[in-house]
Image 1 (cartoon, one colour):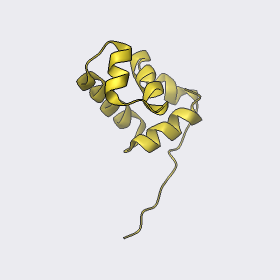
Image 2 (cartoon, rainbow, N blue to C red):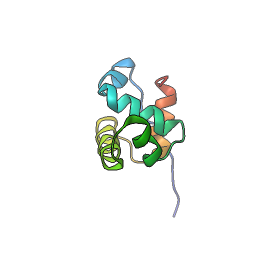
Image 3 (cartoon, rainbow, N blue to C red):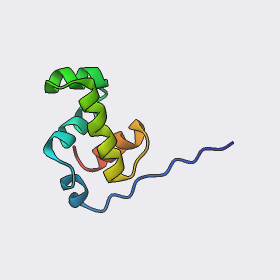
Length: 78
C-alpha cells in the first residue's frame, strides 16, 4: 500500500473568509499544535464544540487530516 500526500488547493483569501471567525480561531489553535481540550479551554468551549468546528472546517475546505489543516492554515497565513 502506498500513500500519496496531496496539497490542498488554496484559491485565495476567499478560502479563509469562507470560515466563520470562531472556525478561523479554532483552526489557528489546532495549527499551533494545541489539542482539542487545550483549544476548548482557551476559547471557553467544550471539546465537543471544537470537534464540531473542525468537522465543519474539514468539510468546507475539503481536507481530511489535522496535518492537511495545519498546512492549509499556514498557507492562508492563519
